[in-house]
Length: 122
Image 1 (cartoon, one colour):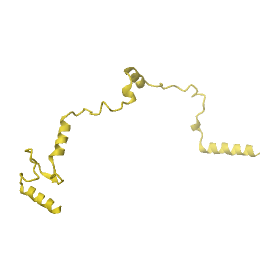
Image 2 (tube, rainbow, N blue to C red):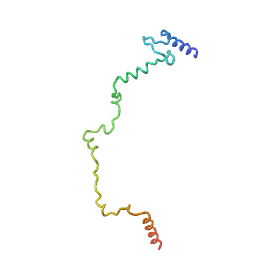
Image 3 (cartoon, helix red, strand yellow):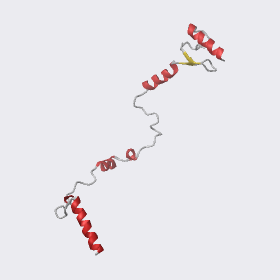
Image 4 (spheres, rainbow, N blue to C red):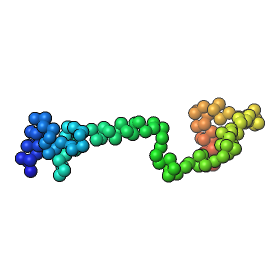
């Protein structure tokens, strides 16, 4: 098997286009690997990539079978409702009556806890 691969490589290096590895359809491609049929050509993957690039940049071949999202199934009316603001900013009605908790320092909080502990114990 190894000798067959070596001889095939020699034929390719010699540039023999009529060898058993050359394609019979008139296209001459350099072989990159050897299989049971004689090998693979390097231009085949390149041809598929070029063909895919030519046939539509934005076309999705699976667009018909793809499952749609909820937003895609909704009507324009439902889409506008989804874009609406849920709740506007509101002013706090009791802001002036509620003492600000941030005004107390750590020392004041510790004193209050000590007073609570003394009243509970006594």
